[in-house]
Structures are given as C-alpha cells and as structure tokens.
Amino acid sequence: MTSLPKIARFAEKKNLACREYPFIITPNPGDSSYSESADILFRISAGDDKSRLRCIYGPATYGSMIITVTNGSGANAYCRLDGSSSALFQRITTNGPGGVLEEFNKPNIYIPCVFDLNVSPLSRVNYWSVFGNNYLPQNEDKTYAAGAANANSLVLDTETNDIAINIANAFGVADVKSTLALLATQLQTDRKFLNSDVRMGYKFNDGLHIANGGTSSAALSFILPSILGQFSKKLFPISELSQSSLDITLMTETASKALISTIAATGAAGTFTYSLTKLRLNLSMVEFNDVITSVIRNSYNSSYMIPCNSIQHFSQNITATTAGSFTLSFNATLQNAKGILFAFIDADNNVTQYPSLTGRTSLGITQAQLTIGPYNFPANRFLSYDGTTAMASLVQHPNYFLSAMKYFGNHIDSEMTCSTNIREFNTCGALANGSFVLAFSLEGIHEQDDEFRSTIPLDGYTTFLNFTTGVNAASATTVHAFILYEFDVVIQAGVAIAMNKLTAMNGTTLYK
Image (cartoon, rainbow, N blue to C red):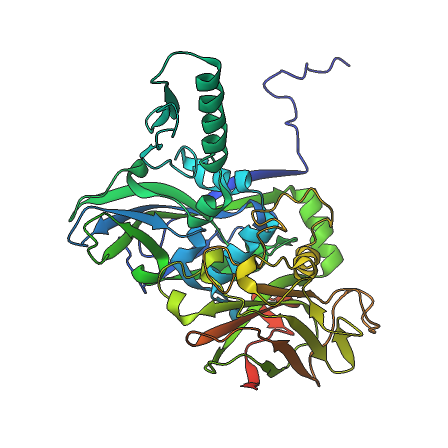
C-alpha cells in the first residue's frame, strides 16, 4: 500500500504536546484612563472550552501601559518615576470563583527591594526598555568645570552622549595628560547605569524639562508579583475553573508617592499628576493536547492542589526620637513561612522617593535578631555590622548584606551583580542615617513534619524582631514587614479555594 507523502493535503497533522501563546487582557469594562487611588480590574476569561487543559505561566506574564505625566508645578521641572513601575500600584488582589485567593499590599515597597537586591543595574535598565525607551539613566545637561592650570574643559552633548574636549593652551604633554585625567574622572562619575540614577527610575521627556502645564508620555512594562505572576513557579490551570475565569485588581498609588520630581532653578513646589492608558495584562498561556489533557485529568481526578507563594504585609510606626533598643512582636496564623523582609522608611521620605533605596533609613541600627518560638536568627547572638556606630562614615553591613542575599537565593561571593552591592547596601547613601532593609531566610533550617516543604511554622508562636538603633530619629519611622510564605490553591468542581493562607496579623506591637 502506498502512503501519502507528509506534505499531502490529507496527511495527519503533527500533534504537539503543548503550545504556548500570548493571551492579552484589556481592563474591564474596556479601555479607560486611570489616575491615582483607582481600582483597575482585569477580568480573565479564557472561555469555557474544556477539551484541552490550559494553564497560565506566571514568570512570563507581565503588564504594559502608557503613562502620561502632567506638570502643574508653576515652573519648568523634571519628573521621574520611582525605581520600579510597580511603584504605581499599592495593592494587587486576585479573585477566583471561590472568593479572594490573594491580596498583596504594598508591592510598591517590596518590588524595589527585589530590584535592589536581586537584579543588576543593566537588567534593571532593560526592564524599562522593553518598549524602546532607550537607556536609563538619561544624562543631564552638563558642562564640566575648567581645569585649574590649563583651562581645559569637557562638555557633554546630551543628544549624542559625546564629550567635546577643549584644550585652551598648546598641545603640550601636560595639557593632554591633565585633560585625559579629567576625562577619565568625569566618565567614571557620570557613567551610564550609575546605580543611584537607575534606582531613581524613568526620567520623562528624555532628560528635558517638562513645561509648566505640559505633559510627557512613555510606554512601560511592569511585573506582576502574584500567584499568576513572578511569585509563581507552577502552571496555574485556569481551564479547570468555572468559565475559566479569574479577576485581578490593581489599585494605583497616589501621585505624590509614585512620582519623584526635581524642580528647576525657580524652586517652585512640585505638583505632578499621572494617568494610565492602554493598560494590558499579557498572560503566557500554555495549552496541552487532548492526549496529555486526558492523562492529567485522570491522574488528578479533577481535584488540583497548586502550591503558591505570596506576601503578607504589615507595618508599625516608631515614634520615639531617641536611640535605643526596640522589639516588634506579632502573632500570625501561618504554617509555611519562607522568609521575612523588613524595610524601614522615614516619615520624611514617605512622599517623594517613597519606595526607593534612598527612601529607607537604618536609624543607625547596630544589631538585630529574629525570634520565632524556640528558634533564633542568628542562633547564638545578634546580627551586627562590622565597624563603628557612626553611620555618617559609610559603615558597611556585610552580615546584613549576606543575609539579604540568602533571602533572595543569590550566591554569596565577591561578584555580586545586584543593583545594590556590598559597598552601598545599608550605608548612608543620600540620607544621613543610611538606607536599610533586614532580610531573614527561614527555609531549611529546622525540623518539620511536612516532607514536601522547606518552611517554618509561625502558628502558635509569637514572633519578635529585636533591634538596637544607634542614632536619634528625626521623626517617626515606619517598619514595613513582608512575610513570604507558601500556601495552596485547591481547585475542585470549578471552584478555587486558598488553603493555609495568611490574611491578617494579630497583636502587632512595638515597644522600647
């Protein structure tokens, strides 16, 4: 019997095991313009076709938008978006057919911490340049000072990034040497991807002033820290839900906290507002063929348990103005904690530079220890820094730095590529008291009955953070705590229910 060639019209089509395709969602009920403190609803409806198993792949899922900034300061002014576009969103809520699956508060604080401690400056720049926004930071207009002896000068052309070299005297050896030395110094000082500038975020109008009453727009992307986004390491089977539907709601941040402005020489107070349009949720959808779909459904017997990571946030204010020892305590009904991150934000920086590294303060913290029932972190003594208590002398905190690296799963070596290196982490930076986070990884360090997890239970214990400050606080400071934990989403009969989820803290107190 003669078979048809593979290219024949009636030959059997190749049945791939799975295929991946983008699934792009518009806000419900349609395109609109959103400003500060607004809820933006994305209603994911992948259809009720149950013939094939369809899953969302979180790490390849992201959002996109056009942001328009309006300057109403009364003068020409600069305007920057802070260190991550997640600064635009202060809450992310995920709802399924069975109710709320996840509510993540203050991603605008947590995500810049992730950026500081988990990605390189270049990666951070590329994050912004997905939609062709050139590089970060855009250079300022700058003319370098003349040399003292030979009247040499360097002038930077901000359009081409070329540096014009002017040598006023004859081309003697001394002239060339001093000019080259000046060039090398300034290139190092004003190099691209300078960490401090990268953390400040996207600069609108390509480095030029936005005129009073004027606007500037940019197309940007943002990551989605949720069980359907960057926290997910598993495929989420959305086709197994009723109507294959989920709701994701993003609440926008206030304009004053989302935007950073540098006013021109007039010194006028900055008033900036923003609006978001063309918002899209770009899902990565994976669809299995009918054979694998049948095998998976038969194996799970239509009952799925998906391990998910999430974050619970709480905060407490320090109102004392003197240095001393403090204890933050709280009770959490939670079995599967993976880590806790603390960020300290001075009230003076609660508006501008709010989520950025330079908006956090150390209060001159000299030592700290976390206690969960019988467990202490570190086990036998306080975590401390090596050096004096004079924070203004750029004291380095290697212990705190390495603990943060462990929290984010980074390698502990001398070739760290994160946005904040060991020389910058928790040192003074732009603030007299320094910029500060504490991070404790809680995985794999105790005995627990659950053979499938590497976590620690908080349930039944009171958790204490003990720390000592070395300087007086100029004003109130807020301690933000983020508990990274693992819970399960159970999908059965089209309904999704969150199990072992942490929803609130009890008895959160701070005492001295």
